[in-house]
Length: 562
Image (cartoon, rainbow, N blue to C red; front, side, top):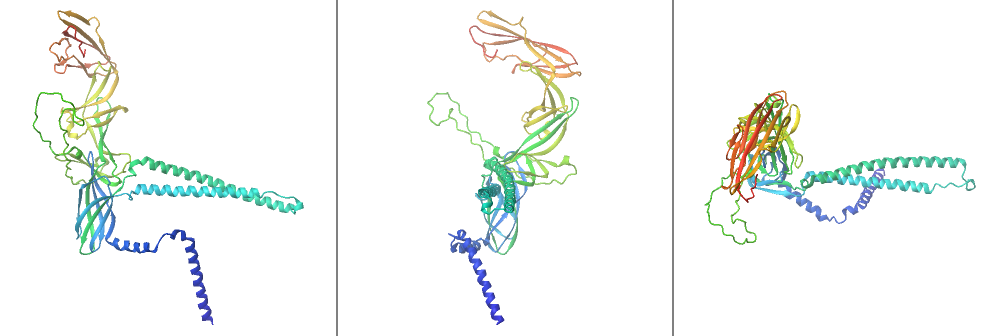
């Protein structure tokens, strides 16, 4: 009898469990509606066919950043089963040059194929940001709903707040009880409304920040994710260590300099830095960088000369879409990547020596041993390359014809050994920021001139000598006389070396003659017309220079350039 009762109770328990499950199914039926059973079978098929497809992520190890483009070296670890396996490698730059992909490594497999593809659903940054916006928007909607519920509770409570007199059976005790009830409920609702209002403000502020972040990222978040599909064949289960290398566009670096001069008797302190930027679609996290002065976008193939023909120019009507001079446009040669220089740098003892400079035949590589993180599409990352103390000679330059101020310059010899590239420089003199300048290494001179800014304590002035200025007719010609007085004053408490520059016009017509009358010891370049005076001014010293010349030309002609 007891056994029969136990079986009956167990059966009843199973019935209850079944009913609960049925109720749960009914509650969730909107979710399952339109979700046929064959989808479950399809899911089983997907699982079966996906057994030989493995997703792995590339781990960036070393990135060589050229002036334009970057070479990314990464490692991939994967385990494959017997047969053919497709390795889907993520964390790949979406700006990849697909022709540059190189795959190597260790493992008993045969590589059947390598293919790059875009995954338009795999942008992790956008997905994470959109998920955050979606969650926060749901939070805002939930809080708004709770605020409406609290408002309705208050309205319903107030609608039933009318109290009748004792004739209707309301005693003082009942009245006190009702007042206590209303006070408690209104306080509870009011407290909840304040909390919800505060939560609503915080959630809306967060939502606005997320939306601004999404907008500020612009096209970077619209970039599809990059993936490499690597097909391998294996006779047995195998573990692979894959070395992956490729070139990506939308990356590079530019030099930036800080130049500090304590005074005109000290060496120049030059900080050589790099602004490293990239918008490859992936973040470079804690990677070792090598900065190369090579620029693959310029091309590495020498141009070929074709025959140059000359003929008499005969004007012809310009055909629509034709070139103005009839010459074909020169096509830039295809870029050839510089060979990667293998790293041989060890860890250094001091922070001042974290860069190893490697001179190759065609470029200079700066191997940065400290790991850096460079965010895709973010602000450029400032990377310190080297610090130099440069022996310098200081001189002042002045061109009174165009500017009354004198400019302090530092002249550096043997500058080519410092591997400087053209770039902007922040100038500091005597502990004060004085402005920006440019450093260029395209000049073939053996010295580098760096402008350190204006010095208001050196006064220059250029004025016309009115008593010399004249215009006379000589036969069929006109002769004009020009004269200028240049005055200099050194108000500093120390002597200075200064170079004064001016010029005399150059004739490009045999009918125009230029005659130099007085240049007061200046160096004169007849080809350029440039005049240079090299002077030393003592403290509080004054100096006066005179420049005179004549120009003769035919009557009735309008002469330009005087």
